[in-house]
Length: 206
Image (tube, rainbow, N blue to C red; front, side, top):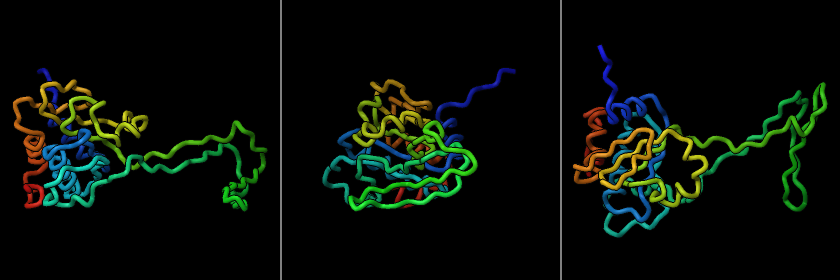
C-alpha cells in the first residue's frame, strides 16, 4: 500500500504543534488582509500555549485600530540577539571591567592550559524563534523590512508560506497557497480550524 503524503496544511499543523516559538511577517506596506491574518494567527498560536510575534515595521494604514492587540506588534527592524563568546579551552576565572571610555573588557583567566586565539569563537546567539510564517507575500523579496534586515538569520528558519496570490513563487518549506481563496485571512481561518476548532473566539474572529 502506498503511503499518502500529508498535504501542506497538515504539514503546517504538524510543524506548529511540535514547535514552540513563531515569527509572523506579512508583506511590506501591509493592507487589512495582511495585518488581520497575522494578528489572528498570533492569537491562535498563543491560545495553544506557543510564543508568537508579529513584526510589522511599516506604517499600518488608518482604520485598523479596532483589531485586537495591535499594540503587541513589533515595530523595530532588527532582531535583538545575544553575543555568545565560546571558549574551547580550560577556563579558570571570568570577570569584566569597564574603561573610562565606557568600553567593556571581558577578563578570562586560563585554567591548566593557556588560552590562544584558536580557543575563542564569537557567535551571535540564536533569536528565540523556531519557525517563520510569511503571510500574504508572493515572494521573499516582497516581505517587509524586518525580513530584509534579518535575512541572514530568518532565511535559515523553517518557513511556512501562506498566501492567495497566483503570483506566489512557492518559496517556503511548507506552502499553503490557495489561489481560489478570497484572502489570506480565509486560508488562516482554515488553518486555525485544522489546528483546533475551539481556538476560534471573538478576538480571532474579529
